[in-house]
Image 1 (cartoon, rainbow, N blue to C red):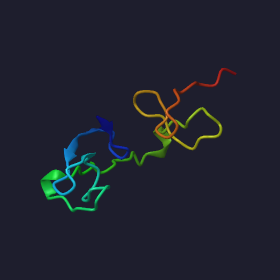
Image 2 (cartoon, one colour; image 1 turned 90 degrees about the vertical axis):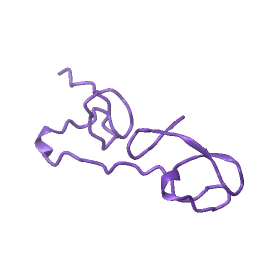
Image 3 (cartoon, rainbow, N blue to C red; image 1 turned 60 degrees about the horizontal axis):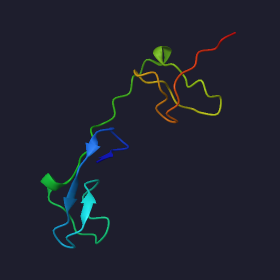
Length: 87
């Protein structure tokens, strides 16, 4: 299995009806031969729901990263765990 880079859910694989190759269901077309899939064969990522309250966001502790920390305590961009300042 593979994780969708948009919604982080597992993306299954499917055999392309044209080229018969086993591929991940990432879009409306086979990325090997270009055949268009039917609607039920396509993985549709869920829309991203961002928290618009900037005051509650915790920025990544890596000074070179622009990401924010998710509910699991890791950066959504670089994947590093949050390390609070120890001043």
